[in-house]
Image 1 (cartoon, rainbow, N blue to C red):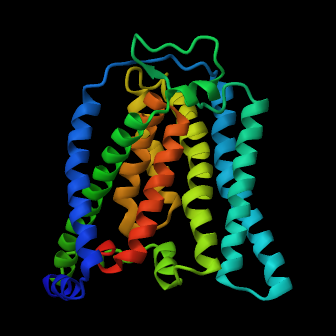
Image 2: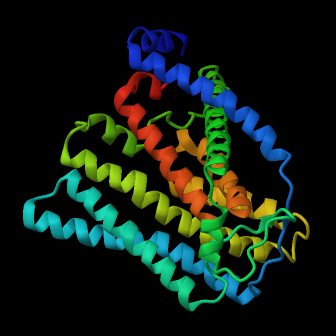
Length: 314
């Protein structure tokens, strides 16, 4: 591991060092943001959905993600492959179509199933009221740049901490494996999308489509599914079994599902931290804030993967 790190550092260019410096500065600012977050006032509102409505919302969210999204993705990809021959560009066009379809399915469910899709913040300070506004307009009213930057910095720092924890976990497991005291550790591999991005030319049509899928399609779809519908339904379903702790338990469960859905062992810990904390952001600042943070976070990583590939993949 030390020799691998030394080899990586030798390959660093100016952009790599800029990435490291900016990431450290952002993480330090994020540590302060987390301290500020801890001191924010607010009382969580009581869930409005019934157990039946929450159960229906839970299965609608899961169905949109594991059925609508992959099925439409496959259908559109196959259609393009049949007309032009298969390529990764067509796969990402299919992914965009699948993301859009899953998002529409969630929005339709929210329209016809009462209390299933939650846009508005539920953790409000006493001086902030949204009486008479729709859930969506409450989410619009709750968005602000200071809230976005506070949440982005906090989520960035949690991602860095999660990545460090994974590296320490992997290193410890690998040492135990080499000593014959444990089985082989999971592969410390990059996510498939990261590998594709690194092989794609920056000014190509393929990169534009990847950017649409990663920085627009995925944030909208995943936030609608996980924080807009899955998390509120879990919070309601956990309430009878864990009074007073339903919010925390639902956030943990949502983080676990979110991490598992991305099927990447090396990113499991940071993805769990991201998925769980985004639930708390939704409660405090609404779903539009979550979507904007998710989009900004993905775009940040996408840009640095192209500018500073060595530093981005330490």
